[in-house]
Image 1 (cartoon, rainbow, N blue to C red):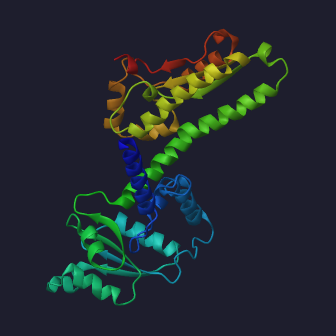
Image 2: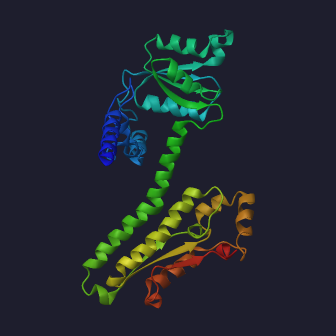
Image 3: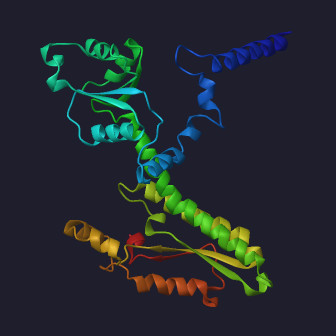
Length: 319
C-alpha cells in the first residue's frame, strides 16, 4: 500500500511538472519551450543567428524588414560608444524605427524618475526599450514595473546579456574554424582515401594543425586552448578509427611562427619580448620548420606514428 502511495505521489508530481512546463505566464512563453532540445534556447543561440546577421551586413543592401513598424527607444543613462552604436546599427539594419534618448539632455536632470521617464516614452507607442543604466539591477526593476520589452544594454558593473551573447557567437566562430573545419576536412580526406583501390597497402596520412596551446594552458586563451586541445583529442580518436585502413592521423603543435600575421603582432615590442621569454631556444619557428614536419608525417619515414603530435615549440611546453 505504501509503495502505491509513493508511486501515486510521483505520478502527481510528474503531471504537475508537465503542466507547469506548458503554462504561459503573462507574456512569458512556457518554460518547456526554452528547454525543447529541437527548438529551445540552445538551438536558437547557435552561431546561425550570428551568421544570419553577418550575411545582412555583408550583402549589397544591408537591410531586412524583420523589425519594420517596430519602434525601439534607446535609453542611455551613461556614456557609451560601442554598445550604443552596436544596438543602433543593428536596429537600423533590421528596419526598426528608432528613438535615441540621452539623460543629460532630458528631464532626468530636473529629477524625473526612471519609471516616469520610461512611462512617458512608452506613451508614444514605443514597442521596445534598450536601456543602459549605471545602477545594478535597473533593467530588472524596470521589467517588473512596466508592461514593455526591456533589453539590458548594461547595468552597473555587470556584463550585459547582449555582450554575453556576442561572446558566445565569437566562441562559436573560433570552434567552427579551429575544430569543425579540421574535422570536416579530415572527414572529406578520409572518404577520398577510402575510395582508393588497395587502400590498406597504399596507406594514408592525415595531418592536423594544432598548437603548443593544445598541450599547455595560457592566460586569456581559454577558448583557443579548448579548441586546440580538441584537435589533439580528434587526432587520437581518428587515429584509432582509421588504423584498420592503414591511415595514420597525427598533429603538429607549433609555437609562434614567423608569418606576416605574427610579424604584425610583434610590432608590439613588449608582446614580442614576452613571447621570446617563454621560448627557451629564444626564437620563433619558421615556416620551413613546420613544412619539414609536414613532409616527415606525410612520408613513410613516419610509418609507425599515429595518434601522436610533433611539438615544434623551442621548449615552450618543456617548462
